[in-house]
Amino acid sequence: MTMTKINKRYFFAFVFLSVGTILCLVGSVLIGSTKIPLAEAVRSLFGNGDYSDILWKIRIPRALSALLLGGALSLSGYLLQTFFHNPIAGPFVLGVSSGAKLTVALAMIFMYRLVRSLNSAAMVLAAFVGAMLSLGFVLLVSRKMKRMSMLVVCGIMIGYICSAITDFVVTFAQDADIVNLHDWSKGTFSGRTMNDVLVILIIVLVGVVGTVLISKPMGAYMLGEGYAESVGVNLRFLKVALVTLSGLLSACVTAFAGPVSFVGIAVPHIVRLMFGTSRPAVMIPACFLAGSVFCMVCDVIARTALSPTELSISTVTAVFGAPVVIAVILRRKKGEL
Amino acid sequence: MSVFVEVCNLSAGYGKKDVISDVNFTVSEGEILTLIGPNGGGKSTVLKAVTGFLPKRGEVKFLGQELEKIPRRELSKILSVMLTERVRPDLMTCRDVVSAGRYPYTGMMGVLSENDREIVEDSIKIVEAENFADADFNSISDGQRQRILLARAICQQPEILVLDEPTSYLDIRHKIVFFEILEKLAAERKIAVILSLHELDFAEKISAKTVCVRDGKIVLSGTPDEVFTRENIRDLYGISEMLYGKYFD
Image 1: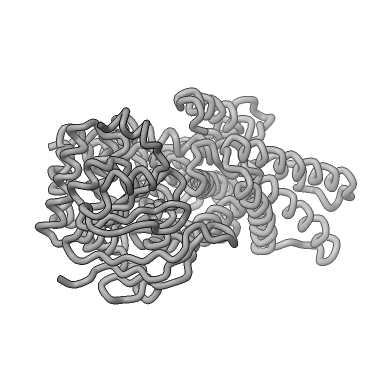
Image 2: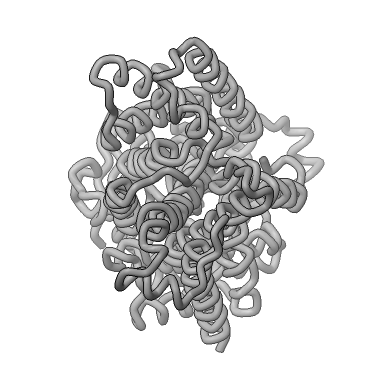
Protein backbone atom coordinates (compact mmCIF):
# COMPACT_ATOMS: atom_id res chain seq x y z
CA MET A 1 0.00 0.00 0.00
CA THR A 2 1.02 3.59 -0.42
CA MET A 3 1.15 4.23 3.30
CA THR A 4 4.27 2.14 3.64
CA LYS A 5 5.94 4.00 0.81
CA ILE A 6 5.26 7.28 2.53
CA ASN A 7 6.44 5.96 5.88
CA LYS A 8 9.66 4.81 4.26
CA ARG A 9 10.24 8.26 2.89
CA TYR A 10 9.71 9.82 6.32
CA PHE A 11 11.99 7.24 7.88
CA PHE A 12 14.89 7.86 5.51
CA ALA A 13 14.50 11.62 5.66
CA PHE A 14 14.56 11.54 9.45
CA VAL A 15 17.59 9.23 9.51
CA PHE A 16 19.32 11.60 7.08
CA LEU A 17 18.54 14.62 9.25
CA SER A 18 19.52 12.95 12.53
CA VAL A 19 22.81 11.65 11.17
CA GLY A 20 23.40 15.05 9.61
CA THR A 21 22.82 16.78 12.93
CA ILE A 22 25.30 14.55 14.72
CA LEU A 23 27.93 14.86 11.99
CA CYS A 24 27.56 18.63 11.85
CA LEU A 25 27.80 18.90 15.62
CA VAL A 26 31.02 16.87 15.68
CA GLY A 27 32.32 18.72 12.64
CA SER A 28 31.65 22.16 14.01
CA VAL A 29 33.43 21.23 17.24
CA LEU A 30 36.52 19.98 15.38
CA ILE A 31 36.77 22.47 12.54
CA GLY A 32 38.02 26.01 13.07
CA SER A 33 41.14 28.15 13.08
CA THR A 34 42.71 25.36 15.12
CA LYS A 35 41.88 21.98 13.63
CA ILE A 36 41.41 19.43 16.38
CA PRO A 37 41.86 15.74 15.53
CA LEU A 38 38.96 13.58 16.69
CA ALA A 39 41.10 11.41 19.01
CA GLU A 40 42.58 14.50 20.64
CA ALA A 41 39.14 15.99 21.07
CA VAL A 42 37.82 12.88 22.81
CA ARG A 43 40.84 12.82 25.11
CA SER A 44 40.39 16.53 25.90
CA LEU A 45 36.71 16.06 26.58
CA PHE A 46 37.04 13.32 29.13
CA GLY A 47 40.41 14.03 30.59
CA ASN A 48 43.08 16.62 30.42
CA GLY A 49 43.97 17.01 26.78
CA ASP A 50 45.57 20.06 25.24
CA TYR A 51 42.32 21.34 23.81
CA SER A 52 40.12 21.26 26.89
CA ASP A 53 39.79 25.02 27.08
CA ILE A 54 39.10 25.59 23.41
CA LEU A 55 36.51 22.82 23.45
CA TRP A 56 34.58 23.75 26.56
CA LYS A 57 34.86 27.51 26.35
CA ILE A 58 34.59 28.13 22.63
CA ARG A 59 33.76 25.29 20.30
CA ILE A 60 31.14 23.32 22.18
CA PRO A 61 29.03 26.28 23.34
CA ARG A 62 29.21 27.71 19.83
CA ALA A 63 28.21 24.45 18.15
CA LEU A 64 25.38 23.91 20.61
CA SER A 65 24.15 27.49 20.15
CA ALA A 66 24.07 27.01 16.40
CA LEU A 67 22.22 23.71 16.85
CA LEU A 68 19.58 25.01 19.26
CA LEU A 69 19.12 28.47 17.79
CA GLY A 70 19.10 27.19 14.22
CA GLY A 71 16.33 24.78 15.09
CA ALA A 72 14.44 27.48 16.97
CA LEU A 73 14.65 29.89 14.06
CA SER A 74 13.43 27.38 11.54
CA LEU A 75 10.54 26.39 13.80
CA SER A 76 9.67 30.04 14.37
CA GLY A 77 9.48 30.53 10.62
CA TYR A 78 7.30 27.46 10.21
CA LEU A 79 4.90 28.78 12.87
CA LEU A 80 4.62 32.14 11.13
CA GLN A 81 4.09 30.50 7.74
CA THR A 82 1.31 28.45 9.25
CA PHE A 83 -0.23 31.46 10.93
CA PHE A 84 -0.33 33.63 7.80
CA HIS A 85 -0.99 30.75 5.37
CA ASN A 86 1.93 32.36 3.59
CA PRO A 87 4.98 30.57 2.27
CA ILE A 88 7.27 33.58 2.40
CA ALA A 89 6.60 34.54 5.99
CA GLY A 90 9.46 34.32 8.46
CA PRO A 91 10.80 36.16 11.47
CA PHE A 92 13.34 38.08 9.41
CA VAL A 93 11.11 39.30 6.55
CA LEU A 94 8.26 40.22 8.87
CA GLY A 95 10.53 42.50 10.88
CA VAL A 96 10.33 40.37 14.01
CA SER A 97 14.09 39.86 14.24
CA SER A 98 14.76 43.56 13.70
CA GLY A 99 12.22 44.53 16.33
CA ALA A 100 13.91 42.21 18.79
CA LYS A 101 17.31 43.56 17.76
CA LEU A 102 16.22 47.12 18.48
CA THR A 103 14.90 46.41 21.97
CA VAL A 104 17.95 44.33 22.84
CA ALA A 105 20.27 47.11 21.68
CA LEU A 106 18.35 49.64 23.74
CA ALA A 107 18.31 47.34 26.75
CA MET A 108 22.04 46.68 26.40
CA ILE A 109 22.92 50.35 26.34
CA PHE A 110 20.58 51.63 29.02
CA MET A 111 20.89 48.68 31.35
CA TYR A 112 24.62 48.75 31.01
CA ARG A 113 24.70 52.36 32.15
CA LEU A 114 22.48 51.63 35.10
CA VAL A 115 23.80 48.38 36.46
CA ARG A 116 26.94 47.75 34.42
CA SER A 117 25.74 44.37 33.35
CA LEU A 118 22.95 42.65 31.56
CA ASN A 119 22.13 39.04 32.23
CA SER A 120 20.87 36.72 29.56
CA ALA A 121 17.35 36.49 30.97
CA ALA A 122 16.96 40.27 30.65
CA MET A 123 18.25 40.11 27.08
CA VAL A 124 15.71 37.47 26.16
CA LEU A 125 12.94 39.44 27.80
CA ALA A 126 13.93 42.58 25.90
CA ALA A 127 14.08 40.62 22.65
CA PHE A 128 10.68 39.06 23.33
CA VAL A 129 9.10 42.46 23.88
CA GLY A 130 10.60 43.74 20.64
CA ALA A 131 9.56 40.66 18.70
CA MET A 132 5.98 40.85 19.96
CA LEU A 133 5.77 44.60 19.21
CA SER A 134 6.83 44.05 15.59
CA LEU A 135 4.52 41.09 15.26
CA GLY A 136 1.68 43.07 16.77
CA PHE A 137 2.20 45.77 14.20
CA VAL A 138 2.30 43.28 11.34
CA LEU A 139 -0.91 41.73 12.68
CA LEU A 140 -2.62 45.11 12.73
CA VAL A 141 -1.64 45.65 9.12
CA SER A 142 -2.76 42.16 8.16
CA ARG A 143 -6.26 42.97 9.39
CA LYS A 144 -6.51 45.83 6.93
CA MET A 145 -4.61 44.14 4.16
CA LYS A 146 -5.45 40.72 2.86
CA ARG A 147 -2.77 40.67 0.16
CA MET A 148 0.08 38.58 1.51
CA SER A 149 2.77 40.17 -0.64
CA MET A 150 1.88 43.56 0.82
CA LEU A 151 2.16 42.11 4.29
CA VAL A 152 5.70 40.99 3.56
CA VAL A 153 6.59 44.40 2.13
CA CYS A 154 5.22 45.94 5.30
CA GLY A 155 7.30 43.58 7.43
CA ILE A 156 10.44 44.47 5.52
CA MET A 157 9.72 48.16 6.06
CA ILE A 158 9.33 47.58 9.79
CA GLY A 159 12.64 45.78 9.67
CA TYR A 160 14.33 48.75 8.02
CA ILE A 161 12.84 51.23 10.45
CA CYS A 162 13.99 49.17 13.44
CA SER A 163 17.44 48.69 11.95
CA ALA A 164 17.77 52.40 11.29
CA ILE A 165 16.89 53.25 14.88
CA THR A 166 19.28 50.57 16.10
CA ASP A 167 22.11 51.99 13.99
CA PHE A 168 21.31 55.47 15.23
CA VAL A 169 21.40 54.36 18.85
CA VAL A 170 24.58 52.38 18.32
CA THR A 171 26.30 55.31 16.63
CA PHE A 172 25.64 57.60 19.54
CA ALA A 173 26.29 55.11 22.29
CA GLN A 174 29.58 55.37 24.11
CA ASP A 175 32.24 52.91 23.14
CA ALA A 176 32.16 51.19 26.48
CA ASP A 177 28.46 50.47 26.05
CA ILE A 178 28.88 48.63 22.84
CA VAL A 179 31.82 46.35 23.32
CA ASN A 180 29.90 43.42 21.96
CA LEU A 181 27.02 45.26 20.40
CA HIS A 182 28.71 45.67 17.07
CA ASP A 183 29.43 42.01 16.39
CA TRP A 184 26.14 40.96 17.84
CA SER A 185 24.06 43.36 15.75
CA LYS A 186 25.38 41.67 12.61
CA GLY A 187 24.61 38.20 13.83
CA THR A 188 27.00 35.54 15.13
CA PHE A 189 26.91 32.34 17.15
CA SER A 190 30.24 33.11 18.80
CA GLY A 191 30.91 34.43 22.27
CA ARG A 192 28.41 32.25 24.11
CA THR A 193 29.24 30.49 27.37
CA MET A 194 27.93 27.17 28.63
CA ASN A 195 25.66 29.14 30.95
CA ASP A 196 24.11 30.89 27.97
CA VAL A 197 23.64 27.53 26.30
CA LEU A 198 21.73 26.31 29.33
CA VAL A 199 19.37 29.31 29.18
CA ILE A 200 18.95 28.80 25.43
CA LEU A 201 18.20 25.12 25.98
CA ILE A 202 15.46 25.88 28.50
CA ILE A 203 13.75 28.50 26.35
CA VAL A 204 13.97 26.45 23.18
CA LEU A 205 12.64 23.43 25.02
CA VAL A 206 9.63 25.43 26.19
CA GLY A 207 9.07 26.64 22.62
CA VAL A 208 9.36 23.19 21.09
CA VAL A 209 7.12 21.49 23.64
CA GLY A 210 4.53 24.23 23.22
CA THR A 211 4.63 23.79 19.46
CA VAL A 212 4.22 20.03 19.70
CA LEU A 213 1.22 20.54 21.96
CA ILE A 214 -0.58 22.68 19.37
CA SER A 215 0.38 20.47 16.41
CA LYS A 216 -3.10 18.97 16.16
CA PRO A 217 -5.05 22.26 15.85
CA MET A 218 -2.28 23.54 13.54
CA GLY A 219 -3.10 20.71 11.18
CA ALA A 220 -6.78 21.64 11.17
CA TYR A 221 -5.91 25.31 10.69
CA MET A 222 -4.21 24.50 7.39
CA LEU A 223 -7.64 23.94 5.81
CA GLY A 224 -8.59 27.53 6.65
CA GLU A 225 -10.14 29.25 9.62
CA GLY A 226 -13.72 28.26 8.81
CA TYR A 227 -13.03 24.55 8.74
CA ALA A 228 -10.76 24.76 11.77
CA GLU A 229 -13.49 26.43 13.78
CA SER A 230 -16.10 23.98 12.54
CA VAL A 231 -14.23 20.97 13.90
CA GLY A 232 -13.88 22.56 17.32
CA VAL A 233 -10.56 24.42 17.19
CA ASN A 234 -10.38 27.35 19.58
CA LEU A 235 -9.19 29.80 16.93
CA ARG A 236 -8.32 32.69 19.20
CA PHE A 237 -6.24 30.50 21.49
CA LEU A 238 -4.48 28.85 18.57
CA LYS A 239 -3.58 32.16 16.95
CA VAL A 240 -2.26 33.61 20.18
CA ALA A 241 -0.25 30.45 20.77
CA LEU A 242 1.22 30.47 17.24
CA VAL A 243 2.31 34.10 17.50
CA THR A 244 3.63 33.84 21.05
CA LEU A 245 5.62 30.67 20.46
CA SER A 246 7.06 32.04 17.26
CA GLY A 247 7.93 35.31 18.99
CA LEU A 248 9.55 33.48 21.89
CA LEU A 249 11.70 31.31 19.65
CA SER A 250 12.88 34.10 17.38
CA ALA A 251 13.42 36.40 20.38
CA CYS A 252 15.67 33.80 21.92
CA VAL A 253 17.69 33.61 18.70
CA THR A 254 18.00 37.37 18.40
CA ALA A 255 18.96 37.81 22.04
CA PHE A 256 21.85 35.39 21.80
CA ALA A 257 22.95 35.46 18.18
CA GLY A 258 21.57 38.71 16.77
CA PRO A 259 19.50 38.77 13.63
CA VAL A 260 19.98 35.71 11.44
CA SER A 261 18.38 35.98 8.03
CA PHE A 262 16.57 33.53 5.76
CA VAL A 263 16.74 30.43 7.98
CA GLY A 264 13.14 30.85 9.11
CA ILE A 265 11.82 31.18 5.58
CA ALA A 266 14.01 28.81 3.66
CA VAL A 267 14.44 25.79 5.91
CA PRO A 268 10.73 24.85 6.23
CA HIS A 269 10.55 24.80 2.43
CA ILE A 270 13.54 22.52 2.08
CA VAL A 271 11.88 20.28 4.65
CA ARG A 272 8.55 20.26 2.76
CA LEU A 273 10.41 19.19 -0.36
CA MET A 274 12.24 16.44 1.49
CA PHE A 275 9.16 14.99 3.15
CA GLY A 276 6.49 15.90 0.61
CA THR A 277 3.99 16.79 3.30
CA SER A 278 3.03 19.70 5.49
CA ARG A 279 1.69 17.64 8.37
CA PRO A 280 2.71 19.39 11.60
CA ALA A 281 3.58 16.12 13.35
CA VAL A 282 6.27 15.59 10.72
CA MET A 283 7.17 19.19 10.03
CA ILE A 284 7.90 20.22 13.62
CA PRO A 285 10.74 17.80 14.40
CA ALA A 286 11.99 17.90 10.81
CA CYS A 287 12.12 21.71 10.71
CA PHE A 288 14.03 21.77 13.94
CA LEU A 289 16.65 19.25 12.84
CA ALA A 290 17.03 20.80 9.40
CA GLY A 291 17.40 24.27 10.93
CA SER A 292 20.11 22.91 13.21
CA VAL A 293 22.02 21.34 10.34
CA PHE A 294 21.62 24.44 8.18
CA CYS A 295 22.91 26.81 10.86
CA MET A 296 25.80 24.60 11.96
CA VAL A 297 27.00 24.25 8.37
CA CYS A 298 26.63 28.00 7.76
CA ASP A 299 28.45 28.76 10.99
CA VAL A 300 31.40 26.56 10.04
CA ILE A 301 31.54 28.29 6.66
CA ALA A 302 31.31 31.70 8.34
CA ARG A 303 34.36 31.07 10.47
CA THR A 304 36.51 29.15 8.00
CA ALA A 305 35.81 30.62 4.56
CA LEU A 306 37.90 33.76 5.01
CA SER A 307 39.72 32.73 8.16
CA PRO A 308 41.04 34.41 10.26
CA THR A 309 38.37 37.01 9.38
CA GLU A 310 34.95 35.84 10.40
CA LEU A 311 31.89 36.43 8.24
CA SER A 312 28.63 37.38 9.90
CA ILE A 313 26.27 34.42 10.02
CA SER A 314 23.61 36.21 7.96
CA THR A 315 26.03 36.65 5.09
CA VAL A 316 26.28 32.91 4.77
CA THR A 317 22.65 32.02 5.52
CA ALA A 318 21.51 34.56 2.93
CA VAL A 319 23.71 33.02 0.23
CA PHE A 320 22.04 29.65 0.74
CA GLY A 321 18.62 30.79 1.91
CA ALA A 322 17.68 33.56 -0.50
CA PRO A 323 17.78 31.38 -3.65
CA VAL A 324 15.40 28.96 -1.93
CA VAL A 325 12.93 31.77 -1.34
CA ILE A 326 13.16 32.91 -4.96
CA ALA A 327 12.58 29.33 -6.09
CA VAL A 328 9.49 29.10 -3.88
CA ILE A 329 8.05 32.30 -5.30
CA LEU A 330 8.67 31.15 -8.86
CA ARG A 331 7.11 27.76 -8.22
CA ARG A 332 3.87 29.24 -7.03
CA LYS A 333 1.35 30.33 -9.56
CA LYS A 334 0.39 33.94 -10.08
CA GLY A 335 -1.98 35.57 -7.65
CA GLU A 336 -1.46 33.10 -4.86
CA LEU A 337 0.73 35.26 -2.71
CA MET B 1 -39.62 12.20 14.05
CA SER B 2 -37.59 14.36 16.36
CA VAL B 3 -36.63 17.90 15.48
CA PHE B 4 -32.87 18.25 14.95
CA VAL B 5 -32.62 21.92 14.08
CA GLU B 6 -34.80 24.71 15.37
CA VAL B 7 -34.27 28.29 14.23
CA CYS B 8 -36.33 30.98 15.92
CA ASN B 9 -36.44 34.74 15.15
CA LEU B 10 -32.86 34.67 13.92
CA SER B 11 -31.18 37.95 12.96
CA ALA B 12 -27.53 38.42 12.07
CA GLY B 13 -25.16 40.64 10.12
CA TYR B 14 -21.55 41.53 9.59
CA GLY B 15 -21.32 44.97 11.15
CA LYS B 16 -23.99 46.70 13.13
CA LYS B 17 -26.54 46.31 10.41
CA ASP B 18 -28.56 43.12 10.18
CA VAL B 19 -28.24 41.36 6.85
CA ILE B 20 -30.90 38.81 7.70
CA SER B 21 -33.79 39.04 10.11
CA ASP B 22 -36.81 37.08 11.32
CA VAL B 23 -35.58 33.75 10.08
CA ASN B 24 -37.58 30.76 11.31
CA PHE B 25 -37.50 27.12 10.29
CA THR B 26 -37.13 23.61 11.66
CA VAL B 27 -35.51 20.52 10.26
CA SER B 28 -36.26 17.04 11.54
CA GLU B 29 -34.06 13.96 11.48
CA GLY B 30 -33.53 12.56 8.01
CA GLU B 31 -34.95 15.66 6.36
CA ILE B 32 -33.35 17.78 3.66
CA LEU B 33 -34.06 21.50 3.75
CA THR B 34 -32.97 23.66 0.83
CA LEU B 35 -32.46 27.41 0.78
CA ILE B 36 -33.07 29.04 -2.56
CA GLY B 37 -33.07 32.65 -3.66
CA PRO B 38 -31.14 35.24 -5.66
CA ASN B 39 -27.42 35.96 -5.26
CA GLY B 40 -26.72 38.25 -2.35
CA GLY B 41 -30.15 37.53 -0.90
CA GLY B 42 -28.74 36.21 2.38
CA LYS B 43 -28.61 32.42 1.97
CA SER B 44 -24.97 32.16 3.03
CA THR B 45 -25.54 34.54 5.91
CA VAL B 46 -28.40 32.39 7.16
CA LEU B 47 -26.18 29.32 7.05
CA LYS B 48 -23.31 31.12 8.79
CA ALA B 49 -25.58 32.40 11.54
CA VAL B 50 -27.19 29.00 12.04
CA THR B 51 -23.82 27.27 12.37
CA GLY B 52 -22.49 29.84 14.83
CA PHE B 53 -19.97 31.56 12.56
CA LEU B 54 -21.64 34.93 12.99
CA PRO B 55 -22.81 36.80 16.05
CA LYS B 56 -26.58 36.63 16.07
CA ARG B 57 -29.80 37.39 17.86
CA GLY B 58 -32.57 34.89 18.23
CA GLU B 59 -32.41 31.22 18.95
CA VAL B 60 -30.79 28.24 17.28
CA LYS B 61 -31.25 24.80 18.82
CA PHE B 62 -29.50 21.60 17.77
CA LEU B 63 -31.05 18.39 19.09
CA GLY B 64 -33.01 20.48 21.56
CA GLN B 65 -29.95 22.21 23.01
CA GLU B 66 -29.20 25.87 22.55
CA LEU B 67 -26.26 26.39 20.20
CA GLU B 68 -24.36 28.62 22.64
CA LYS B 69 -24.60 26.05 25.40
CA ILE B 70 -23.12 23.17 23.41
CA PRO B 71 -19.38 22.82 24.09
CA ARG B 72 -17.25 23.33 20.97
CA ARG B 73 -16.01 19.76 21.00
CA GLU B 74 -19.49 18.29 21.32
CA LEU B 75 -20.86 20.60 18.65
CA SER B 76 -18.27 19.38 16.15
CA LYS B 77 -19.52 15.84 16.65
CA ILE B 78 -23.10 16.90 15.96
CA LEU B 79 -22.64 19.42 13.18
CA SER B 80 -20.41 19.42 10.16
CA VAL B 81 -20.26 22.03 7.45
CA MET B 82 -19.11 22.43 3.89
CA LEU B 83 -18.22 26.04 3.20
CA THR B 84 -17.67 28.07 0.05
CA GLU B 85 -14.35 29.22 1.53
CA ARG B 86 -11.56 28.40 -0.92
CA VAL B 87 -9.22 25.87 0.56
CA ARG B 88 -5.65 25.77 -0.72
CA PRO B 89 -3.61 23.77 1.73
CA ASP B 90 0.05 23.24 0.98
CA LEU B 91 1.06 19.66 0.19
CA MET B 92 -1.98 17.84 1.50
CA THR B 93 -3.34 14.80 -0.29
CA CYS B 94 -7.08 14.37 -0.70
CA ARG B 95 -6.94 11.67 1.95
CA ASP B 96 -5.28 14.14 4.35
CA VAL B 97 -8.12 16.60 3.75
CA VAL B 98 -10.78 13.95 4.36
CA SER B 99 -8.95 12.79 7.50
CA ALA B 100 -9.20 16.33 8.87
CA GLY B 101 -12.86 15.51 9.50
CA ARG B 102 -11.82 13.07 12.22
CA TYR B 103 -10.44 15.95 14.30
CA PRO B 104 -13.15 15.88 17.00
CA TYR B 105 -12.58 12.19 17.62
CA THR B 106 -8.79 11.89 17.81
CA GLY B 107 -6.63 12.35 20.87
CA MET B 108 -4.21 15.04 21.95
CA MET B 109 -1.76 14.46 19.11
CA GLY B 110 -4.38 13.80 16.45
CA VAL B 111 -3.23 10.28 15.60
CA LEU B 112 -5.83 8.33 13.60
CA SER B 113 -6.91 4.99 15.03
CA GLU B 114 -7.66 1.94 12.91
CA ASN B 115 -11.36 2.78 13.22
CA ASP B 116 -10.74 6.38 12.14
CA ARG B 117 -8.88 5.16 9.07
CA GLU B 118 -11.75 2.89 8.11
CA ILE B 119 -14.20 5.76 8.35
CA VAL B 120 -11.90 7.89 6.19
CA GLU B 121 -11.71 5.19 3.51
CA ASP B 122 -15.44 4.72 3.73
CA SER B 123 -16.12 8.41 3.21
CA ILE B 124 -13.78 8.48 0.21
CA LYS B 125 -15.66 5.54 -1.25
CA ILE B 126 -19.03 7.20 -0.73
CA VAL B 127 -18.05 10.17 -2.91
CA GLU B 128 -16.34 7.87 -5.45
CA ALA B 129 -12.96 9.47 -4.97
CA GLU B 130 -10.81 6.35 -4.60
CA ASN B 131 -9.00 7.11 -7.86
CA PHE B 132 -7.58 10.41 -6.77
CA ALA B 133 -7.42 9.96 -2.99
CA ASP B 134 -3.62 10.14 -3.02
CA ALA B 135 -3.42 13.14 -5.34
CA ASP B 136 -2.42 16.55 -4.08
CA PHE B 137 -5.57 18.44 -3.13
CA ASN B 138 -4.41 21.49 -5.11
CA SER B 139 -3.86 19.50 -8.29
CA ILE B 140 -7.41 18.17 -8.75
CA SER B 141 -10.34 19.90 -10.43
CA ASP B 142 -12.82 22.15 -8.63
CA GLY B 143 -15.51 19.50 -8.95
CA GLN B 144 -13.27 16.84 -7.46
CA ARG B 145 -12.41 19.21 -4.64
CA GLN B 146 -16.10 19.61 -3.82
CA ARG B 147 -16.47 15.85 -3.59
CA ILE B 148 -13.46 15.62 -1.29
CA LEU B 149 -14.84 18.36 0.93
CA LEU B 150 -18.13 16.46 1.12
CA ALA B 151 -16.19 13.36 2.14
CA ARG B 152 -14.48 15.44 4.83
CA ALA B 153 -17.87 16.53 6.14
CA ILE B 154 -19.23 12.97 6.09
CA CYS B 155 -16.11 11.72 7.84
CA GLN B 156 -17.00 13.94 10.78
CA GLN B 157 -20.04 11.66 11.34
CA PRO B 158 -22.45 14.49 12.08
CA GLU B 159 -26.14 14.37 12.82
CA ILE B 160 -26.62 17.70 11.11
CA LEU B 161 -24.94 18.59 7.82
CA VAL B 162 -24.87 22.15 6.51
CA LEU B 163 -23.66 22.86 2.97
CA ASP B 164 -23.30 26.20 1.23
CA GLU B 165 -23.78 25.87 -2.54
CA PRO B 166 -21.96 22.57 -2.55
CA THR B 167 -22.51 21.60 -6.18
CA SER B 168 -21.56 24.74 -8.09
CA TYR B 169 -18.53 23.19 -9.82
CA LEU B 170 -19.92 19.72 -10.45
CA ASP B 171 -20.85 18.36 -13.85
CA ILE B 172 -24.34 16.94 -14.30
CA ARG B 173 -23.40 13.35 -13.50
CA HIS B 174 -21.58 14.32 -10.34
CA LYS B 175 -24.43 16.60 -9.35
CA ILE B 176 -26.71 13.60 -9.54
CA VAL B 177 -24.23 11.49 -7.60
CA PHE B 178 -23.89 14.25 -5.03
CA PHE B 179 -27.63 14.53 -4.42
CA GLU B 180 -27.95 10.75 -4.31
CA ILE B 181 -25.38 10.74 -1.54
CA LEU B 182 -27.22 13.44 0.38
CA GLU B 183 -30.52 11.59 0.09
CA LYS B 184 -28.85 8.41 1.23
CA LEU B 185 -27.24 10.12 4.22
CA ALA B 186 -30.60 11.56 5.18
CA ALA B 187 -32.49 8.31 4.70
CA GLU B 188 -30.02 5.82 6.13
CA ARG B 189 -28.08 7.75 8.72
CA LYS B 190 -31.00 9.99 9.66
CA ILE B 191 -28.87 13.09 9.15
CA ALA B 192 -30.65 16.42 8.95
CA VAL B 193 -29.31 18.29 5.92
CA ILE B 194 -29.49 22.03 5.28
CA LEU B 195 -28.13 23.36 2.03
CA SER B 196 -28.30 26.36 -0.22
CA LEU B 197 -28.75 25.65 -3.90
CA HIS B 198 -29.05 27.34 -7.26
CA GLU B 199 -30.17 24.20 -9.05
CA LEU B 200 -33.93 24.55 -8.65
CA ASP B 201 -34.77 21.34 -10.50
CA PHE B 202 -32.72 19.33 -8.03
CA ALA B 203 -33.95 21.33 -5.06
CA GLU B 204 -37.50 20.41 -5.97
CA LYS B 205 -36.66 16.72 -6.17
CA ILE B 206 -34.65 16.25 -3.00
CA SER B 207 -36.08 18.62 -0.40
CA ALA B 208 -38.59 17.89 2.26
CA LYS B 209 -38.82 21.62 2.82
CA THR B 210 -37.71 24.64 0.86
CA VAL B 211 -37.05 28.10 2.23
CA CYS B 212 -36.91 31.09 -0.10
CA VAL B 213 -34.60 33.87 1.00
CA ARG B 214 -34.56 37.33 -0.55
CA ASP B 215 -33.31 40.65 0.85
CA GLY B 216 -32.42 38.96 4.11
CA LYS B 217 -35.93 37.71 4.79
CA ILE B 218 -37.74 34.46 4.32
CA VAL B 219 -40.29 35.35 1.70
CA LEU B 220 -41.79 31.91 1.40
CA SER B 221 -41.33 28.44 2.80
CA GLY B 222 -43.03 25.10 2.59
CA THR B 223 -42.93 21.78 0.81
CA PRO B 224 -41.57 21.68 -2.73
CA ASP B 225 -45.13 21.35 -4.07
CA GLU B 226 -46.10 24.59 -2.42
CA VAL B 227 -42.93 26.52 -3.29
CA PHE B 228 -42.00 25.50 -6.80
CA THR B 229 -44.71 27.17 -8.81
CA ARG B 230 -44.11 29.36 -11.81
CA GLU B 231 -45.38 32.42 -9.97
CA ASN B 232 -43.26 31.94 -6.89
CA ILE B 233 -40.02 31.35 -8.76
CA ARG B 234 -40.58 34.33 -11.02
CA ASP B 235 -41.26 36.55 -8.04
CA LEU B 236 -38.36 35.23 -6.00
CA TYR B 237 -35.75 35.81 -8.66
CA GLY B 238 -37.44 38.76 -10.34
CA ILE B 239 -37.81 37.14 -13.77
CA SER B 240 -40.32 38.59 -16.22
CA GLU B 241 -42.99 36.32 -17.64
CA MET B 242 -41.52 36.73 -21.12
CA LEU B 243 -38.01 35.67 -20.16
CA TYR B 244 -39.30 32.84 -18.00
CA GLY B 245 -41.30 31.56 -20.91
CA LYS B 246 -38.40 31.87 -23.31
CA TYR B 247 -36.05 29.74 -21.21
CA PHE B 248 -38.26 27.35 -19.28
CA ASP B 249 -41.28 26.58 -21.42
